Length: 430
Ligand code: S3P
Image (cartoon, rainbow, N blue to C red; front, side):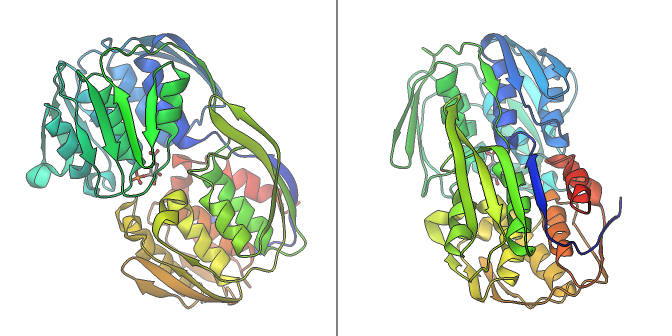
C-alpha cells in the first residue's frame, strides 16, 4: 500500500494510542505459563502480537479475543505442548527472542522462523546464554540465524550471564528460561534496558531482584498466578504524534493513558532537553507500570547530543528523533546507537537515505548520525519504508511539514505496531 501525506496546518487533538507492544507480548506469554485466566485489557491488536498469539495457540494455549481485550487460559509453567508445525514469528524480534527463552525450558522439539527481515536478525545473542543453561539450538550460519530448531530441556541450569549489549529481548529470554532453572539466574547488562518483563513477573507473583543493571530470578520455586492486566498506550507510538505536535506550528495535543516506564521515557527527556513543551498529568501506577497523560505544544527546538546509557531508553524512537532534529536549530548528534543497524531494517541507513531524498542533509556514522537544523523538508518525492513500521511512520510525520506532498511505499507495515496510525493522521486534516 502506498500512502500520500500532504502538509498540515496546526494540530488540535485529544487521542489515545494503541497498547504497548512490549507489554502486550509479555502479557500473552506470561499469561500462558501462569495458572488460570489472564484478562488483558487495551491489548495491542497488531501483526506482531498476532504472531505471538498464534504461536502460543500452536502450543495448546487457548486465547479468546474480543476487540482490544484478550483472555489467555494459562496452563502453568509446564502446560505448553509440542507444536506440530513450524512456528512463525513473522516480523517480530520480541516474539522470536522471548519465545526462544520459553522453548529452551520445554521437554519438546520446536522450530521457529520469521519473515525475510527477521531471518536476517542476530539470534546468537539469545542462543548463547540459553545453550549454557542446557538446551540445544540449531540454526543457519553456525546457529545464528532463523529458522532455529530448539531441543528444550526441563532441567535447566541457572546461569549468571553478562550480556555484551543492552537488550531487553535477550534479558527477558534468559529470565523466562530462568523460571525453570534449579537455582538463581542473573543477567547483568552493560546499561539498563526496558524492564517490562521484570515488572510483569512481579505482577504475576514472582520475586525479581534488581541491583544496578543486574537482575536475578529464583528458578523452580516459582508460581505465576493469572492476573488482570491493563496495557498502557505505547510511548513508542505516541512518540510520532509528540514530535508531530512539537514541529507543526500552533499545535496542542493531548495523548491519554501513555506508559511512562522510566526505561522507556528517554524520548521525553531528549525532546524536553531540545526545548519541547511536554507536560505529564494524571500520573498513576497500573500493574507496576507508570501511566499518565501527555500534553504537547508546538515548540522551537534546539539540537542536542544523545549517546551512551541514554540510547537504550529511546532506541526505537531514534528515527522520529531524526525528524525532530531536522527542525531543531543547531546540531543534533546520535552516538553509540549501532544496535539500530540490527532492527527490522538498518535504521541508520534507512533514515539517512530517506531524509536526503526529502531534501535534508544528514551525516551518517557507524553508530548514529549528525543533523544540523533547521532544514526545509522539500517533499514531492516517493520514499521507501523498507517495510519497517517505525521508518514508515517517521516519514509520514516529516510529510506533515513538507513543502509538497510525499508518498511512502509499503505503508501497510505500520500494522506491525500501530494499525490505526493513518486514521489518526487523517483526522488532523479536519
Ligand atoms: C523490545 C526490546 C528492544 C526494542 C524492541 C522491543 C522488547 O529490542 O528495540 O522494539 O519488547 O523487549 P532489543 O532487545 O533488541 O534492544
